[in-house]
Image (cartoon, rainbow, N blue to C red; front, side):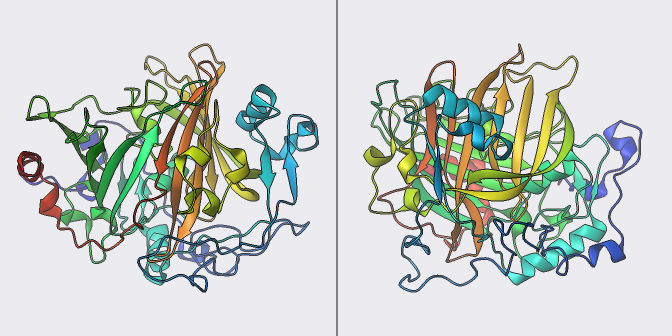
Length: 452
């Protein structure tokens, strides 16, 4: 039988007692688009003026860019206001994450943070803003946190009340209707040597398609197919993922085609703490896209908002004239190509629930108020020690108004190595309108594609 989305579920079906988290009132939702931006951020700047007012974001591509081209830097004249180093870190501790403080102290003087003028570039289509407003008064979080109902297209809780709502805002944020692109990943050795793994990524966002309704998308957020292009020993490997909204009721479906065995097999363990494929055990599956999957293993606490220096407007890292050799360095990336800005972020802490096993006992997430994109995280080991620090370097895309990552990395402080994904330099521009159909992402379609 066709699975129906969370909208059709009741508390009794999910096997727990308790009330749904309440949707906001009409009067509360009226704040969206006035004192709050349409996505729920504070419209005004901060008192010092170092964070400006949001005035619509980067909704118009800069002069000189044309459809089909790689995004160009809209701020080519910007220079760093100052650079945070291991020597001056004490001046900025109140505006830094614990992870960045540790990186500066451990990897200085090479690891530095160039801080630029804050530019609130995050922007989305007008109909997505309309859905934020509708979701605010209809969406409800089930009390075990594993599902959301009466929401569609984008983040369900623009005026969040707790940490789980913020995390769901990240998981369900608008990233377009479909997307096709090619990029590579690497796990550099301590001396900086590396090999690239090149993948083709094809996304079909069922939840975000215009005109979609919950009952018709079969509990799916998106479909993803990756096809490994290089190196030769991995070429032809295909991974297919059906990402579900309520992963307790209907777990993520995943398949993997190995060109050696020439068989498409189910991958039931592609979730949670499982090593992310081709990451040299430097990143877990649930760290892809900074966080994904069911949130049931943790207790989530909303710690409030902070003004933090975070990766933002990473057009230098996205530049088509930059190569992976320009980016990759021993122990961390070339920080001269990075850009940090002062932004307001929601801080969410996740602590492992009693009786649950995961390699991370505690995690801290820094979530952009303007986009609901997780910008930085900290991962702690089972002894409570800071183990890994992750970053998402983001840009505003032009062919589809979307604020999303161009590059992610996870730094392992114990191994003194890192995993980097999103090396899209030298590849064609992201295609946000490839013309996919949902049936192209079935297991049988993947099997046929693998055999060609």
